[in-house]
Image (cartoon, rainbow, N blue to C red; front, side):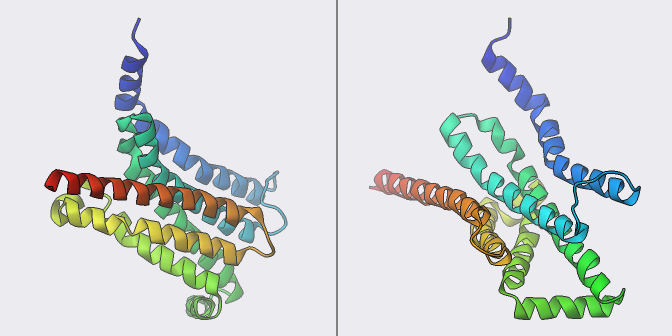
Length: 225
């Protein structure tokens, strides 16, 4: 019989990336199924306001996957299971795509409808929201910040930028995640648990990251001494 370690190695080599892909695609597939039910006159779970439900669901999914991507390195450190790092960029890219769909749903299903199909009116409405609503401002900054990270999430980009510059660029995911949590917090009304829960998890991950960076800095100083 194969040992548990052998089974884990085989899973990491052949099954981890496909499993991650389908798990990350699952929220999008579920949402598409709900819209199929709505448009075909069947049952669905989109509620009385499908447009708002859609872009909020996509935003929540983007934030949760973004936080999940930040938890992969701590998971590796705690479990010593390094193959998990193979899917870190894939998870980060999924967060970007859900964030982009969140924005497109907001623009296409909300602003475009409000502008009666006028693309110019849609962009004018978006600009007004960015200027007047703090949560829209924070969300737009976060999505714009994700774009260079998504564009450089490939081995070619690492070779072109160099590992050090690439790592520094991708450290910006942490302030982007903070902006995303504040976007969520300012968007919801009243004192709801969701923003506090997401913010608390992010705070733990940021604390761990700072502690790990401090330990690495101390180790380098000892070696240099």
